[in-house]
Image (cartoon, rainbow, N blue to C red; front, top):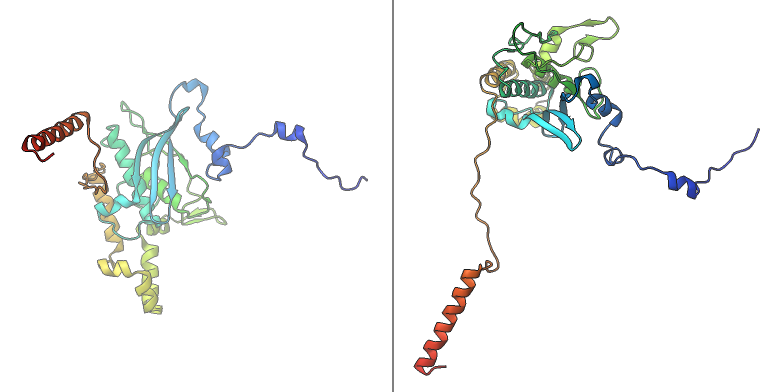
Length: 297
């Protein structure tokens, strides 16, 4: 049995060394997953393969529908959690219920763009149960997209699936099962739709509010200070989300922000154009000739 042999990385090794893709080196893209989400079947020719991209930051939720080209990804439609205050949701913009609202906003906005919103209304009564869009006879087929979760851990009850459920209820055809939604029991294999609906309507937040109110009022004031300031109570959370869903369905169109008039300060003289420079020289000549005529030069 030979002993330990040290691997010597010689010139031949380094000449053949190939660096990984930049976004792999940065730890931003899972290319194993991306390849399967992007590559289209050859018999579909140039048909785009759409992805529903869901990403979370500390203060926002980003939902986009995109497809890949050689030049890079093309964004077809986007919706963000920071748009939700326009629809009546001013607090809790990164929880499961907000993820559902963002996914719903994306779906309704996308279908409105392609004039499919009147054909595929989706699941208007939220029940938390399984719902898949079915194609209608003599009508265009439903818009199909595949969920792109990025690098997030796809555990049961993860918020990415809340955004996906919102998009599916909004009328987008997203292939999925119920096994990763809140309410699924792995041991028994049963799915509790009522528990899932509770999460969609913010019931888990309401339960925690009630718990803190009873147990620790200081922690409640600290944790839910913004809720208290806006007058949001545990009993009124479900009604608030119902109104948000209705407002999103009523008008999902994006409203561009009004342009701001910004007056910039200058600490140096503005650059003159050619006509202004010539005029300046002319004024200097006239001033000098006037002084000569008056005998002051």
